[in-house]
Length: 191
Ligand SMILES: Cc1cc2nc3c(=O)[nH]c(=O)nc-3n(C[C@H](O)[C@H](O)[C@H](O)COP(=O)(O)O)c2cc1C
Image (tube, rainbow, N blue to C red):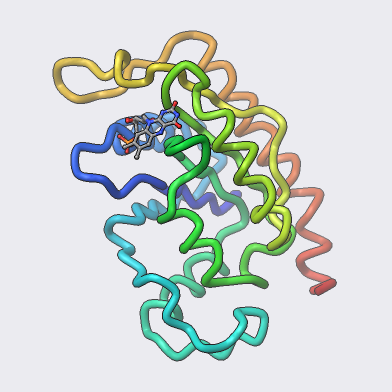
Protein backbone atom coordinates (compact mmCIF):
# COMPACT_ATOMS: atom_id res chain seq x y z
CA UNK A 1 0.00 0.00 0.00
CA UNK A 2 1.16 3.51 -0.79
CA UNK A 3 0.77 5.85 2.16
CA UNK A 4 -0.81 8.82 0.43
CA UNK A 5 -1.21 12.20 2.06
CA UNK A 6 -3.98 14.32 0.57
CA UNK A 7 -3.22 17.95 1.35
CA UNK A 8 -6.06 20.47 1.30
CA UNK A 9 -4.19 23.59 0.20
CA UNK A 10 -6.93 26.16 0.74
CA UNK A 11 -7.72 27.41 4.25
CA UNK A 12 -10.21 30.15 3.32
CA UNK A 13 -13.69 30.36 4.83
CA UNK A 14 -16.10 29.11 2.17
CA UNK A 15 -13.34 27.32 0.23
CA UNK A 16 -14.33 25.03 -2.60
CA UNK A 17 -11.06 23.17 -2.13
CA UNK A 18 -12.67 21.07 0.57
CA UNK A 19 -15.32 19.36 -1.60
CA UNK A 20 -12.76 18.90 -4.39
CA UNK A 21 -10.36 17.24 -1.96
CA UNK A 22 -13.19 15.07 -0.62
CA UNK A 23 -13.76 13.82 -4.18
CA UNK A 24 -10.04 12.94 -4.42
CA UNK A 25 -10.17 11.15 -1.08
CA UNK A 26 -13.23 9.13 -2.12
CA UNK A 27 -11.58 8.00 -5.36
CA UNK A 28 -8.33 7.10 -3.59
CA UNK A 29 -10.19 5.17 -0.87
CA UNK A 30 -12.19 3.16 -3.39
CA UNK A 31 -9.02 2.48 -5.39
CA UNK A 32 -7.73 0.18 -2.65
CA UNK A 33 -4.00 0.82 -3.20
CA UNK A 34 -3.65 3.64 -0.67
CA UNK A 35 -3.49 4.25 3.07
CA UNK A 36 -4.70 7.81 3.29
CA UNK A 37 -3.65 10.59 5.60
CA UNK A 38 -6.02 13.55 5.25
CA UNK A 39 -4.07 16.76 5.85
CA UNK A 40 -6.39 19.75 5.79
CA UNK A 41 -4.03 22.69 6.27
CA UNK A 42 -6.83 24.58 8.01
CA UNK A 43 -6.82 21.88 10.72
CA UNK A 44 -3.04 21.42 10.68
CA UNK A 45 -2.90 25.18 11.36
CA UNK A 46 0.85 25.66 11.18
CA UNK A 47 2.00 29.08 12.36
CA UNK A 48 3.87 31.20 9.83
CA UNK A 49 7.54 30.07 9.75
CA UNK A 50 8.47 30.02 13.43
CA UNK A 51 11.52 27.71 13.30
CA UNK A 52 14.94 29.32 13.89
CA UNK A 53 16.99 26.65 12.05
CA UNK A 54 17.10 25.50 8.44
CA UNK A 55 14.83 22.45 8.18
CA UNK A 56 17.62 20.26 6.76
CA UNK A 57 19.06 20.21 10.31
CA UNK A 58 15.79 18.81 11.70
CA UNK A 59 16.33 20.74 14.91
CA UNK A 60 12.70 21.60 15.32
CA UNK A 61 11.66 23.61 18.35
CA UNK A 62 7.86 23.72 18.03
CA UNK A 63 5.48 20.85 18.72
CA UNK A 64 3.49 21.84 15.62
CA UNK A 65 6.60 21.35 13.46
CA UNK A 66 7.44 18.01 15.10
CA UNK A 67 3.90 16.80 14.43
CA UNK A 68 3.96 17.99 10.81
CA UNK A 69 7.41 16.44 10.30
CA UNK A 70 6.24 13.06 11.62
CA UNK A 71 3.18 13.06 9.35
CA UNK A 72 5.06 14.02 6.20
CA UNK A 73 7.84 11.57 7.04
CA UNK A 74 5.29 8.75 7.29
CA UNK A 75 3.85 9.50 3.85
CA UNK A 76 5.14 7.85 0.65
CA UNK A 77 3.41 10.26 -1.73
CA UNK A 78 1.23 13.34 -1.88
CA UNK A 79 -1.68 14.87 -3.72
CA UNK A 80 -1.92 18.62 -3.25
CA UNK A 81 -5.40 20.00 -3.89
CA UNK A 82 -4.55 23.57 -4.67
CA UNK A 83 -6.34 26.77 -5.59
CA UNK A 84 -4.81 29.41 -7.82
CA UNK A 85 -4.41 32.79 -6.16
CA UNK A 86 -2.91 35.62 -8.19
CA UNK A 87 -1.34 33.28 -10.76
CA UNK A 88 0.27 31.17 -8.05
CA UNK A 89 -0.46 28.57 -5.36
CA UNK A 90 -1.61 29.26 -1.81
CA UNK A 91 0.51 30.77 0.94
CA UNK A 92 -0.65 27.97 3.25
CA UNK A 93 0.97 25.41 0.93
CA UNK A 94 4.21 27.37 0.70
CA UNK A 95 4.40 27.57 4.48
CA UNK A 96 3.69 23.84 4.84
CA UNK A 97 6.42 22.97 2.32
CA UNK A 98 9.05 25.33 3.74
CA UNK A 99 8.78 23.98 7.30
CA UNK A 100 10.42 20.69 6.23
CA UNK A 101 13.08 19.37 3.89
CA UNK A 102 14.25 15.76 4.19
CA UNK A 103 10.68 14.62 4.82
CA UNK A 104 9.67 15.44 1.20
CA UNK A 105 12.73 13.91 -0.47
CA UNK A 106 12.19 11.44 -3.35
CA UNK A 107 8.42 11.27 -2.94
CA UNK A 108 5.88 11.59 -5.77
CA UNK A 109 3.61 14.62 -5.88
CA UNK A 110 0.34 14.79 -7.78
CA UNK A 111 -1.62 18.01 -8.03
CA UNK A 112 -5.32 18.69 -8.40
CA UNK A 113 -5.55 22.37 -9.25
CA UNK A 114 -8.51 24.62 -9.78
CA UNK A 115 -9.34 28.26 -10.39
CA UNK A 116 -10.76 30.33 -13.21
CA UNK A 117 -10.23 29.72 -16.91
CA UNK A 118 -6.68 28.42 -16.44
CA UNK A 119 -7.73 25.60 -14.11
CA UNK A 120 -4.92 26.53 -11.76
CA UNK A 121 -2.17 25.71 -14.26
CA UNK A 122 -0.13 28.79 -13.38
CA UNK A 123 -0.30 27.81 -9.72
CA UNK A 124 0.92 24.30 -10.57
CA UNK A 125 3.78 25.71 -12.64
CA UNK A 126 4.77 28.00 -9.79
CA UNK A 127 4.62 25.13 -7.30
CA UNK A 128 7.08 23.06 -9.32
CA UNK A 129 9.98 25.27 -8.29
CA UNK A 130 9.80 24.79 -4.48
CA UNK A 131 8.53 21.21 -4.93
CA UNK A 132 11.62 20.23 -6.89
CA UNK A 133 13.83 22.19 -4.48
CA UNK A 134 12.77 19.94 -1.60
CA UNK A 135 13.04 16.77 -3.71
CA UNK A 136 9.42 16.05 -4.52
CA UNK A 137 8.91 14.29 -7.86
CA UNK A 138 5.90 15.75 -9.70
CA UNK A 139 3.63 13.55 -11.80
CA UNK A 140 2.90 14.58 -15.38
CA UNK A 141 -0.80 13.74 -15.13
CA UNK A 142 -2.37 16.65 -13.30
CA UNK A 143 -6.03 17.29 -12.75
CA UNK A 144 -6.85 20.87 -13.74
CA UNK A 145 -10.34 22.15 -13.05
CA UNK A 146 -11.43 25.37 -14.74
CA UNK A 147 -14.32 27.32 -13.19
CA UNK A 148 -14.48 24.66 -10.47
CA UNK A 149 -17.18 26.52 -8.57
CA UNK A 150 -19.65 25.58 -11.34
CA UNK A 151 -19.17 21.90 -10.48
CA UNK A 152 -20.22 22.25 -6.84
CA UNK A 153 -23.77 20.93 -6.51
CA UNK A 154 -26.57 22.17 -4.24
CA UNK A 155 -25.36 19.92 -1.42
CA UNK A 156 -21.87 21.39 -1.61
CA UNK A 157 -20.33 18.29 -3.23
CA UNK A 158 -17.94 18.42 -6.19
CA UNK A 159 -19.28 16.74 -9.36
CA UNK A 160 -16.33 15.69 -11.56
CA UNK A 161 -16.64 15.28 -15.31
CA UNK A 162 -15.31 12.26 -17.22
CA UNK A 163 -12.04 13.88 -18.16
CA UNK A 164 -11.30 14.83 -14.56
CA UNK A 165 -12.11 11.28 -13.42
CA UNK A 166 -9.72 9.90 -16.06
CA UNK A 167 -6.93 12.31 -15.15
CA UNK A 168 -7.20 11.49 -11.47
CA UNK A 169 -7.10 7.76 -12.22
CA UNK A 170 -4.01 8.29 -14.39
CA UNK A 171 -2.39 10.37 -11.67
CA UNK A 172 -2.99 7.70 -9.03
CA UNK A 173 -1.44 5.08 -11.35
CA UNK A 174 1.57 7.32 -11.84
CA UNK A 175 1.92 7.90 -8.10
CA UNK A 176 1.96 4.15 -7.44
CA UNK A 177 4.58 3.59 -10.16
CA UNK A 178 6.76 6.47 -8.98
CA UNK A 179 6.46 5.36 -5.37
CA UNK A 180 7.78 1.90 -6.28
CA UNK A 181 10.62 3.37 -8.32
CA UNK A 182 11.64 5.91 -5.70
CA UNK A 183 11.36 3.72 -2.59
CA UNK A 184 14.89 2.26 -2.98
CA UNK A 185 16.35 5.76 -3.24
CA UNK A 186 14.54 6.84 -0.10
CA UNK A 187 15.73 3.70 1.67
CA UNK A 188 19.31 4.48 0.62
CA UNK A 189 18.89 7.91 2.24
CA UNK A 190 20.77 9.51 -0.64
CA UNK A 191 20.49 12.94 0.90
C1 LIG B 1 -6.99 36.21 -3.51
C2 LIG B 1 -7.52 35.46 -4.69
C3 LIG B 1 -6.82 35.45 -5.85
C4 LIG B 1 -7.30 34.72 -6.95
N1 LIG B 1 -6.53 34.66 -8.07
C5 LIG B 1 -6.91 33.81 -9.06
C6 LIG B 1 -6.05 33.61 -10.18
O1 LIG B 1 -4.97 34.15 -10.29
N2 LIG B 1 -6.44 32.75 -11.13
C7 LIG B 1 -7.65 32.08 -11.06
O2 LIG B 1 -7.96 31.32 -11.95
N3 LIG B 1 -8.48 32.27 -10.02
C8 LIG B 1 -8.13 33.11 -9.02
N4 LIG B 1 -8.94 33.28 -7.93
C9 LIG B 1 -10.21 32.57 -7.93
C10 LIG B 1 -10.05 31.30 -7.13
O3 LIG B 1 -9.37 30.32 -7.88
C11 LIG B 1 -11.40 30.78 -6.69
O4 LIG B 1 -11.95 31.79 -5.84
C12 LIG B 1 -11.33 29.49 -5.92
O5 LIG B 1 -12.62 29.23 -5.43
C13 LIG B 1 -10.36 29.57 -4.76
O6 LIG B 1 -10.26 28.34 -4.10
P1 LIG B 1 -10.83 28.12 -2.63
O7 LIG B 1 -12.30 28.46 -2.68
O8 LIG B 1 -10.61 26.67 -2.32
O9 LIG B 1 -10.06 29.03 -1.71
C14 LIG B 1 -8.52 34.01 -6.85
C15 LIG B 1 -9.23 34.06 -5.64
C16 LIG B 1 -8.74 34.76 -4.58
C17 LIG B 1 -9.51 34.74 -3.28
